[in-house]
Image (cartoon, rainbow, N blue to C red):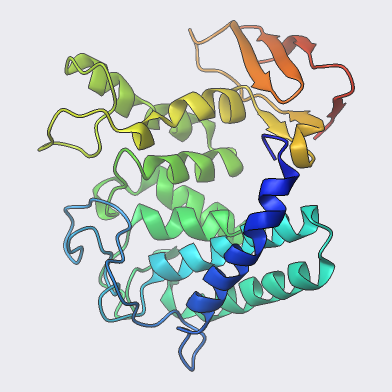
Length: 287
């Protein structure tokens, strides 16, 4: 979507299908992702139930966070199939995603209005809520409940680390939880206050290293805050939907590399677009 290399996508699509098929083979009789071999790392979390980065249920299965990761993969592969004009594959992955979401209801706790990580509903995390939202399989009401949990979970949800914060930010942006989104960016302000010049991999205790996975606020500056998103494969169309800005954040000015040149954009102090220019032939769409 962001670049324009359809040959690469065509070449790798069969591999994506095989990967999903391998996970599909691990579904149990209830349609849940069962025990997985190997190191099922999701995030460095120090909360109870997490072992060496593996979420509760990840060693013996099932795990809500790993199950929702599978559902996200199904969604994103369906989008790739759509771009490749493969409607049969697209329909299959979307059907499997719906089945995965239905099976995941066993994790939902109606008292907390959140997905638990484990079937016993002893553990809850930001990870399960964010991934469930990003699967695109939930209705608006359920998405709103989970987003509220991400906003106010505080110490009651196992927290995402710096790297996994990308998915939390994406979920908050998707559900228009702008205040919580900007509050979350405070983690990177604290990195600077600690004297770090690059993002580290995980919270304290941590070594001082340069970890690229922690640099995703650069992506969100364009894709979420400025709201510049590709609206067609190869970035042939662009959608612009900027966030309302907190006091003191604007005006903003940005230049985004594009396969055909550059997108240039300016907003006022409230996040409203005042100038926008895209490369010749790139259509801007609303919404």
